[in-house]
Length: 99
Image 1: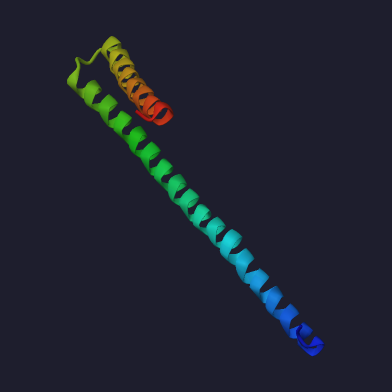
Image 2: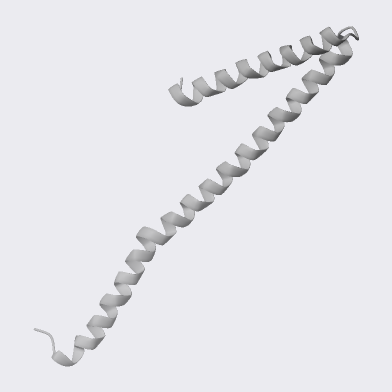
């Protein structure tokens, strides 16, 4: 059996060991999770911005390429909408099904 005078030192070591364990098993994984979440948010924002800019570019291209009447302007908007709706459906199916 240990000496009773060593008990405060052992309690202090136990507390320090518990702190290190909690830091290792909770705080560090939460930091990594937070970093992963931040990267995911930034990537999502950048991809969304790219999709918006690509849709504007496609629409502008179609407006310039098609004849200059109001109906062809509507057709350009419709074509752009259909193309990006199909793209969104493909991305959605890939994300949900993982195929």
